[in-house]
Length: 406
Image 1 (cartoon, rainbow, N blue to C red):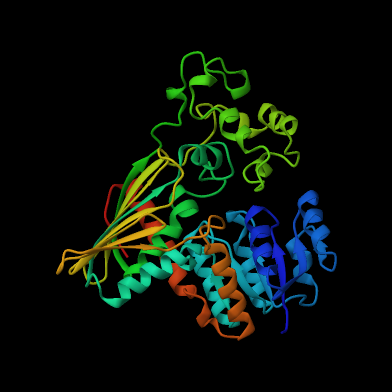
Image 2: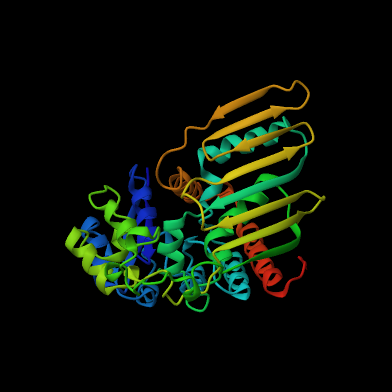
């Protein structure tokens, strides 16, 4: 069995996770890593001594081709240039979502991949979970007839939203992108996958309601460790992060600091951005949003993203002409309108890696590379582009108060 050679561009949490999944069964090897952060780069190289390290992806791109494919997992705003260049160099590409933060750059990436004829996949991991496979099979069997409407909820979770979208890297549209694209292009892609239809019209409502200076409690400090009212605050940084000490999974503490001892985490909370009061940050992305979709053929879907929930799997209700399905990320409850009977299907999702989606995506990508056949990948470049078009249309609809036709 020939090992697939991979290069990694961006050795943050997502990129290193994808590489770990790729190495699990010996089908792939890491040939190179490009990462400007020295500690992250050296951490990856320590586990892959045969790989070559670079502090800039451009230096890697100047070398003769070192791998079959490249995994691009830089910050969202830094996707387009490496994606286009590595496509031109003939690398197959696995690109973290979102593809880019401007629609024209998403289109530019797709055109470059198509022109080069390379295998290209966006990390829409929700398509690849055991849960989705079972759900898709039920839908394709015709058991609930034609899909008429869908209700879909993404419960981001109060502490997760505070971590990533108030204090973290995705808190500002001018430094990252808008919330729907950063977090929920997964969901928009997933809804098109379930229906097998393209979206034709979009409307949307939402905004930044709670995480603002006007909602800071009386007596609160701008840093959680100095705050007299922290004991009564659900978003207090010490309440969120300290329980993760000793966890086998270093996320989210590794985002705060390389020293994930109690002393190191407390130092990060005292000095770094993750110890700020959620009402005293520079965030501007929404904390709640609803999106209404109309599909080709007339089916509709409503999607809700909210920060104000437990961090749990998505919840979905699908209504068809002959039956309905209620799903909670693990169980599918199928109701038959003819007999009135219900069946509960346990999909047994893994507890990590986006419920098995990370591993499913990597397996599909390696299958595509090994067979030089993109059919193993569940969405081609144009299909992935469509999910981004929906996100941009929804954000325009929210800001302009209008219905957007795609």
